[in-house]
Structure formats: structure tokens, C-alpha cells
Image 1 (cartoon, rainbow over the protein chains, first blue to last red):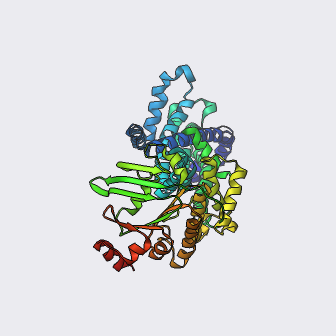
Image 2 (image 1 turned 90 degrees about the vertical axis):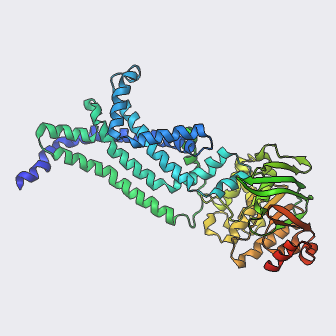
Image 3 (image 1 turned 90 degrees about the horizontal axis):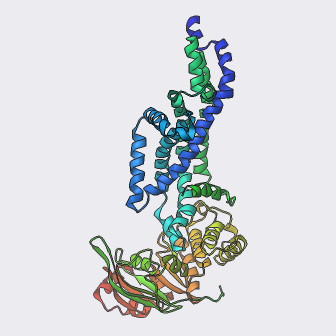
Length: 252
Length: 246
């Protein structure tokens, strides 16, 4: 029994791996997931708006893109982009696979996030666009100021879920072989686990993942509750809505 | 309710609209003099709403002409046209993510490019006109249907339209809330704004309209003063319709 416990709860190994996990792993995981989340969100919004366009030449590329990146295993995409584009991108990034890992994660996230946004925007009643147009707004203004803000609001829980998935998927860049200083949580845990033949470092890494993802899960629940209750009596704080619109405007 | 208004005449000429193989409007002519109120009545599916939506080109006619103040606007910029023609919908269509005040401020700022101060001042004044100044900070969903529709009317009026279109504006309201909205519309008519009102409220049509048009199957079947239409209907179709709704 002691032997069994020792293979995944060896405190010596856990203490040994912890400084690296926090100093290097956590930082890299947050960078990989965070930057991909931002790029994926911007790109996803572009895909959603394209996908909803009346124009076939806008709708089609968005459709095809989404089908491909949602249809492929993430690990395959990451390897193909990370190594395949590696030769192409060498003048730009040298032998550093880190930016390529972020690129791959972003492209995958964009496909999923684009579908989330598209569903949200489509769920906004047609009357909202009509009323905006009837007031003299152009299609673009009506979408930016009225339809998209409401659509995005409805899918915020799904969006945060996607961010959680992204944190977990960031482990897959493991296969691109980063430098010691670029290692994310899983890789650091896995390296020491391989060296020692003991799973405790991975358990420690897992604990750090949970520290990131569990609060996000609760954020989803919180937003969900706010969306259901918060639309009653509340004065509009004014420009808070615009901040959302502005980030999207960059993407359009 | 005493502000002077600038209103315009509206003329629709031989308007045709088809959805696929379904002919919704089969050559409709309608002219409404400046400052007058025309009510459009008729059974569901007769094309009333489609006709109304042609006036601000939310529905683009397949053929025909649209004149505002004597000038054709069928090929002009639709956004410019819509600044001159306000519309109120059956389901209010207030912006759910914005406060009541911001519902009025947003189009003033984004379409008319007014400053925040100007737009806010206008919005407060328009809300006061419809008796809802104290609702300014609330979300639309916190208001009753009747209040929401009054906000929608205030929002349309804030743009200073020359013509107002009402698309069954009271059909989604609880019966006890209908009167407040109808009174507000009657007030606009007496102020000299040009109104085109698609309605099932025959009492309103009789007492407020200058002219009533009866539509059936994509055509205006009969048109005249409320007295003519309601007391001396000539066409059998209108007689039959009135016998069912009155």
C-alpha cells in the first residue's frame, strides 16, 4: 500500500518539481493558452461574421475552414503546423517552435469559437437587426452595436468552456519539443516523472491545472446565473458594452 | 406634445412583391397626404405588413415606385430614407442589452452623430413625452409591454421622422395596455405627423384615421374615409371582413 501511494504521492518529488511548475510551467501554460484564446477569439469572430454573410464567397471559406480544423485531431494539426510550417517560418521564428505552437492552438480554437459566436449571433431575434436598420443604421453598425453584443453575451459560458479546453489542449505542444525554459506544466511534470519513474510530479502538475480550470468552471456558472437574473432591474453602466464591441471591431 | 413637426407625403405606385412563387403584393397604389393618417386593415396574410415595410424599404419591392414628399426614393440610399421614416413594430424590438435611455441615445449617436450630451437631452425629453422619464435607467425587460412600446415610439420619434409607420403596434399587448399606446398614436396624428398604421383596432381606425385602406390578397380592395369604409362598405369582401371583426 505504501509502495502504491508512493508512486503518485511522493512528497519529495512533488516539492522538487513545484518551483519549476510555478516559475516556468504555469507561466508558459498561461501564455500558450492565453495568447491562443485572444487570437482564437478575434479570428473566431471574423469566421462567425463571415459564416453569417449573405455573400457566398465569404460564407464558404469560413465553412471549409471550420470543417477542417474542427474535424482534425488537435494533435495532428499541432504537429503538421508546428513541424510542417517550421521550415517555412524559419526566417521568421528561427528554430523556435513556440510561436508555431501558439499558432496551431489559435487556429484550432478559432474554429470552435467561431461556431460558438455564430450560434450566439444567430440566436438574436431578427427584429433586433430590423429595428436597427429601420432607425437608419447600416448593416455593419447594426451588427456591431446591437446584434453581436447580445449574441456574444448569450454564449459567454460556452466561450469560457472553450478557454478551459484550450488550457488543457496546450499540453499537446509537448510534441513539438520546446526548450527547457519553454516547457509548460505537463511537460515539466512528465520530464521529472520519466527521470524518476514516479508519477508524483504529474500529480503536482495536475493540481496546478485544476487551480486554473476549476475557477474558470465556476466563472461559467456565475456568468450563467448573472445572465438569467441580471437582465432584470439594472441601470446600464454606460460604456461597458462598448469595450466588447471595440475588441471585435479590430477583427472586422 | 406641441412641438411643430415636419411631415411628408408618401406615395406608393404599383408595388409588386413576391416571395418565391407567392405574390404578396400585386400592384398596390397608396398615397398619403402630408400630415394625414391612413389605417390599413384586412385579414392576416393580405400583405398589409409587407406593404408597410416597402415604405422604409425593409422590404425592397420587385417593381413599382416609392415617393417621399413628391420625390422618388426607390433607388436612393435606404439608410437615408429610414432616417426620415420611423417604424414601430409589433414586438417592440427594443435593444435588450441597453437601458431604456440608451435605446434612444444609441441611434442618435451612431446615425445622427450627435454628441453624448445632445443625444441624452433629446432622449430624456422624448421619454418625458411618453410619460416614462423615470424608466430611463432600466433595462427594457423590466418594463411592461405597453411601456416598452411607448419607449419604442419615443426612440423612433427621437430621430425626427417625417413619416411614422406602425406595424400592428398593439397586437402583442395585454388588453389593458392597448389604450395608452393608441392614445399616444392619436396624439401624434393630431400633431400633424404623417402616419401609416397597420392595425386590427377598428375603433382606432374609425376615430383617428383620415383614410382607411382595406387590403385582401395583395391588393387594396377598397379605400375611403372611415365612415365610407365602416358604414357603407361596397365590396362584398370588405362587408364579409367587417361582419367578422366588428
